[in-house]
Length: 358
Ligand SMILES: Nc1nc2c(ncn2[C@@H]2O[C@H](COP(=O)(O)OP(=O)(O)OP(=O)(O)O)[C@@H](O)[C@H]2O)c(=O)[nH]1
Image 1 (cartoon, rainbow, N blue to C red):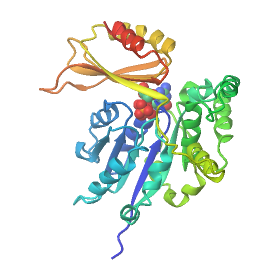
Image 2: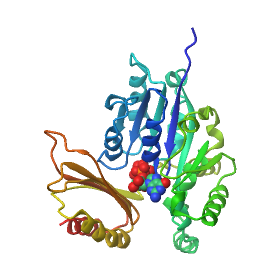
Image 3: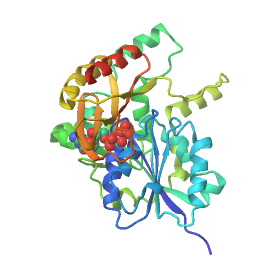
Image 4: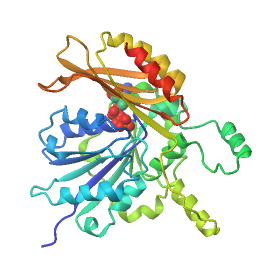
């Protein structure tokens, strides 16, 4: 008997756009579908996996959540992703649907291409690539970089062929989408949302479905019911990197030009108790602003509190909430992951975050 392929949904989008939030919502509304999650993060601390395990969904137990933390999934496809999929597909009880959350810095294209590997292609299909957009960040001009500055830099150094790394990545993630979710529309008025739509649409020639969402509230039926078979269409969704590579190849100047994440850096910090989390948040804001920290997240140990406090910062917008009690035998500790552009003053950022927590 011909086995039906298991559908897999790829959830991508820049740092902090709301990927984990969408998945958390979906798990609560999946109508009994057994979901397997593959979670990929940039940085050593598996915060997203822990947050999702903390939500205790019955259709997706801790066993069904697999974390890939050896760097961005697009660079570790062969070593990490493919073996993980193979193991998942060998389980006795197969999932009804596989959901993959890429890191905010990953290119979805190499991941989708992996679905054409022979022993994966016969068993799984990409139901769709969902690209989550932080509408507030788009409205604030986060992805529309200062082109004059970049042009000037290019004029001074003609080996610079890139747009800014953030803008390029944003476009590559859009280009690969079957569904674009304009998330965080609660933070904008109607005219700003309309501008964001125009801004997003002008960056892609294909016309994927575009929907608005607040707090990642997208019906599971929509999210998991795209039926796109994206692996058959990757030729039409090439990343800047792939196009550049092809152009160099055609001009005979091809060289060993790997995609990497050199433009971004992250570090993990382990700290002691934070007595006054709201003062910590207040002190963090100027640190994030002055050092252009792109993302900070983790868990805080607040003395006297039985629960751990989750902290999520996307730019200077910071949210904290208690998610679950510290488990017995679990070490109470403040653990943070901080992501920024590689040219930041690393030592100064570490010191400033430590000082803010003290
Ligand atoms: N105001 C607002 N905040 C949101 C919305 N969706 C998510 N957030 C918040 O944005 C922050 C980041 O959300 P996540 O879901 O962790 O984002 P992510 O894309 O998984 O982040 P990375 O995995 O680090 O790239 C959290 O504080 C969320 O609560 C939304 O629609 N509106």
